[in-house]
Length: 160
Image 1 (tube, rainbow, N blue to C red):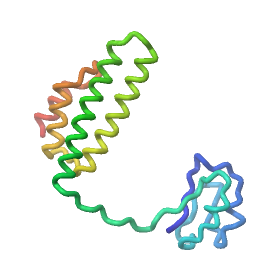
Image 2: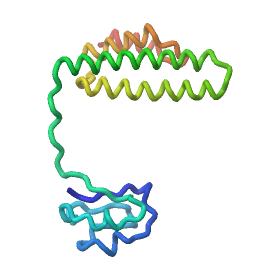
Image 3: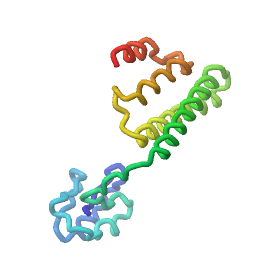
Image 4: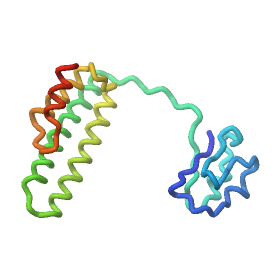
């Protein structure tokens, strides 16, 4: 494990400089030199008043293989999120209320991100993959957003 600093959270209190036994911290650049960082030391992590420093593992465990049932469930959930996104877009396009419009657009973006994550979790979404083609076809059929690039998606499907 080694320490990492989130520069957005750092308030430059610089306590990390004083507690680091190896001088791995550098507040000028915001970087922590992983090669100098002692494995699991935590002194800078515990001393940081803004909680800008945290530990990251040097190696991550390999991703576990998912069962076919899990993969199918993830894909079905992703399809339902696509429908929710389209409903939110439709509400945003049809409402006159600016607050409802903003909320619906936010919901549409949120469900899109979740949908993409679910598809990635169910297997890599490679361009030549049937998941990608199905996703694009579903978007063509159901997406009512006036800014949705339908012609580009049609062309992409032809190329795939």
